[in-house]
Image (cartoon, rainbow, N blue to C red; front, side, top):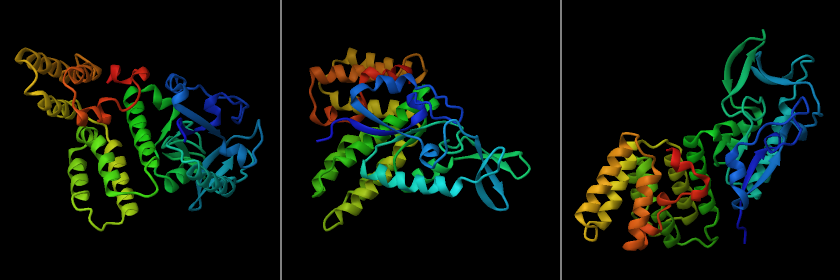
Length: 314
């Protein structure tokens, strides 16, 4: 059984000298911190398309109504060849059950919304996804993030939440039962509540009547719904609402002074005087004193290992 979580990654980000100038890119500290929890599978679409190292740099050109991936000096168009490579790799990524992909920013192949697009006069007229990333996002519903963005705790938190969601869905049994979906969603309820209350309500309606439903179709619908919910940045207000909801489970056990202290911590968090890790740690401490199976199963309380340190900055 697979234990580490597979992530695709632009080869240059891992330090391989495969960029057009035979250079590489820097790996974000977070990726080094993932350790044995994840396996990084490097890929360079430009190299796979037959471009050498070093090579002529290319750029996206919107000429005569057709997007090109043109050599800066020669004008040679690599678009179709790179697109074919991207399609092949998307199929491979699906077979490898990749849970996410980390790409190089600003690359005309791998950029995620940051690749410059030029008009036929050589003037930048916008930015978009690179050729490889475009295909990747069309063919696979997995989170894609630029390596440099992972230096932001907010972006890294969102990316890892979606990666862990994809991992949980990939680990569902082939012979799917209604109970499997209900148990999986149960673990995500508070995480979705903190991300998007509207998605929380939609998921409840989706799973309200599962009798006779197509389980595979229902699984895909639920994944789309949760993926979209976790694609949204939560607010401090929504986190406070979720945490107050959690505290309600301890209303009969917690002494009044501890309730008051928790409310004080939440207000300090709301005003950005404390990070999210503080009230979360307090809730986890309450669970040591007053165990609750439902709360202990919640992804919200630990969506990924504490060692990554992200919630100390949220």
